[in-house]
Length: 313
Image 1 (tube, rainbow, N blue to C red):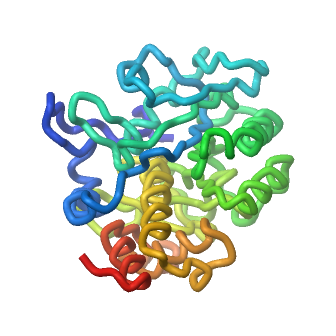
Image 2: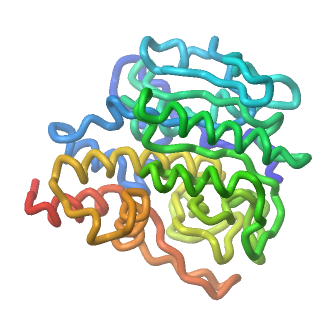
């Protein structure tokens, strides 16, 4: 396990200017270019809610004090609305920064989205079986999705093992339900440089597994194997996953506004979004595994959707 907190660092404090949360990752994902090209067309997550399922969030953090940013909280361990982290939890407060921060001009990828913080695990790098409380957290998302307009889930938990195949648990039925409800769910593959498997729950059906590419290079690193659905540039796969979930919200709005026939790409909207990301992404060959992956290019995905809908900008 990598020794730092496990998210991309904030690279600038803008104090009023529109500044990307992490300049290197945003440049490689082509976020800033997408903002510039489609700023008059898209709202960057406005009115969509991202559910963040992690080990708890300190709501006193300035990012989550911004009016209207946090729309709901839940604690599926204790069955109440207190999502505050308890030791050894540490990760949930900051994992939403890359996707959602909108503070003093510093912007996450879908900076106008709203978030629901759900404490469903005791610590992000799992030390025991916590599938029951994860399943309960996913069930809370399903029960509240319509009310809150939850369109994507950042399922941050990972067990740091090398799974070559799915590991059936109680979360699988909940993941399937969310896919049928047209809700994107993704999880990080892991940060251990494994090449023979990826973490649970990223390896599960109906949960997209998100790996990472090195900032400044179109090269895969960290945990990768069969089961990786998409690579996203970041220093850790938790941030890769945060960017993927936020990008899914942005592309969902683009599909709606472009009148793109998403069913030409997949059986559900999340499947279609992934297929578009894969179709338009950079090809990345990995010598260590002998596998070929696709790396997220947000601008190219948006261009594909608007072109398919008969619109150009």
